[in-house]
Amino acid sequence: MQFMETLSTPLVSLPIQANPEAPTVKSDNQNRPVLSLIDQKLFTASTLSPFSSLEYARKVFDEIPEPNLYMWNTLIRAYSWSPEPSESVKIFLRMLCESPYFPNKFTFPFLIKAATKLSRLGVGQVFHGLVVKSSFGDDVFILNSLIHFYASCGDLDFAYRVFVRIGEKDVVSWNSMISRFVQGGCFDKALELFKEMEAENVKPNAVTKVGVLSACTKMKDLEFGRWVRSYIEQKGIKMDLTLSNAMLDMYAKCGSVEDAKKLFDEMEEKDIVSWTTMIDGYAKLGEYDLGAMDVGEWNHENIKKQRMKLNCHLTTSLIDMYSKCVEELQLICSTEGMKLRSSPMLLLLPMYYACACSHSGLVEEGRMFFNQMEPVYGVVPGVKHYACMVDILGRAGLLEEAVEFIEKMPITPSASVWGALLGACKIHENVELAEQACSRLLELEPENDKALVLLSNIYAKTEKWDNVSELKKRMRVSGLQKERGWSSMEVNGTLHKFLAADNSHPLSKEIYSKLEEIVAKLKSSGHVTNKSLLLQLVDEEDMKEQGLNLHGEKLAIAFGLISTSPSQLIRIVKNLRVCGDCHTVAKLISKLYNREILLRDRYRFHHFSGGNCSCMDYWCRWEELVLKNSTQTS
Image (cartoon, rainbow, N blue to C red; front, side):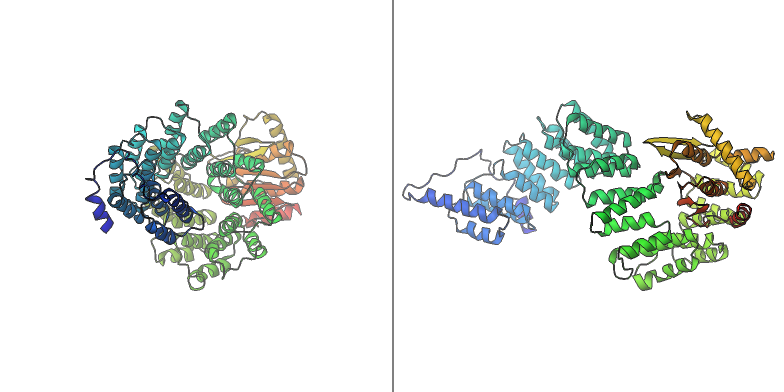
């Protein structure tokens, strides 16, 4: 505080000298120039060497009788980089008082850097004023430092004002402002500035691209990100590891794992960031409706082949990826040598285990992990953990216990908690409780269209068609729309998308012909379509069956059978939950056609093989249908 008081009073009123000459060397000491040169070299080595000691450098400096401006600047610079940037300001004040020198253009950037590290707006503003008075207001290096200073202090507007006043901006000027806009959350401004940079014919470098890609990532602007990639290739900008990782991160977070994987395969050099980004992208596919557990497993295998050491971020990403299946989660934890009680990063593992348990019907295991969180792992359960526990109880049909669990929660139930209960009500067709859960959910999220759609489906399953009509009317009035279901499949790098009863595909004729063959084989094997699964009011029985047979996932499977080799895995992604009839049909097709099918719906992976599914049919209550079909097809 003392140096601040000193700074705020005398510094502003100091006389301004325009580049004074260095003092004349005394003629009575002919050895002085030689000694000065030795002092300067010794001081520089002790100050700026990687093995330097500022304490020693300060002692050397204090022994120099008449340090020149270079020495003052060197000491100011060294302290501006040190953990004690305030010493830079003190040295500066001492220079003004004890020497005949006034700061030059090399002094101010270090002083501004010190003010930046101190995060003191007033200090930097004083230096800015001195810069202007000293006729250095046009020095681009100093102005770039001021941009960094003002932005770091949270004053983006003034940083931009400094930027605009730069007559001839260099690439550092543009990079400083672009990166500061990104860090300040002004992503659209960052992209606009990049376009201005292009118009000014300033050649961007890799730093520029990293900043622009960061903006694209935050805005989830995939198209602009792809344009940046194209621009980099056209301009011949070298794709170093940092830039490649930034682009990889942009693709993954914008939801295009296809682009990410293509870039990843092209990268000559990969580090832990590259691998973590890819795995994290696959782990979060549920947010973007994409699915590729096999590619995720491929990544995991490559990590093991290259003997890469798993850090906490990479391990967490692997756990997140495998968390939909408790068996795979247990396997990854055991094979990678993770100890539940000893590893700090596995503080989140009980939650992942609980989520996996909810998808596998392991109620007791889920209950055990939840109850162990605080006493064993020292983690106080949060709202996500409570929602997970409600999901476990609800899926198992323990609805009364789920309600009691919610009532006893020590924290206010969130929308995710009521959403878990509502989902369980759909599985077990509990209309009354579903209405209560939906009402509580809408109190928290009035625009949650998925809650109304889910309640409408529950009404449809229980054939309460008047209620369905009322809900649809309510959604129309409020402007809410039901998300339309689709299924997609990638073949030879091309994504094929199918809606229900879709006939827009170029191979539509062949697809429907294959679908007719499938339906005929299913009937001959004893399969009977469960028409109660059609959540629409359709009177004619044959129309009900046709409606189910034309679901997007069935069209995608038919396309997969005609477009891939017999040994190739059929990979399908669905944006909503797979319906019960499609789930049963996929199992039967995997047996009748001896094909493996990987279907990723909104909630989990389903791996169909030999007439079985990896989810063990626990995802929904189809036990009666499964038992009936297994009897008829055995």
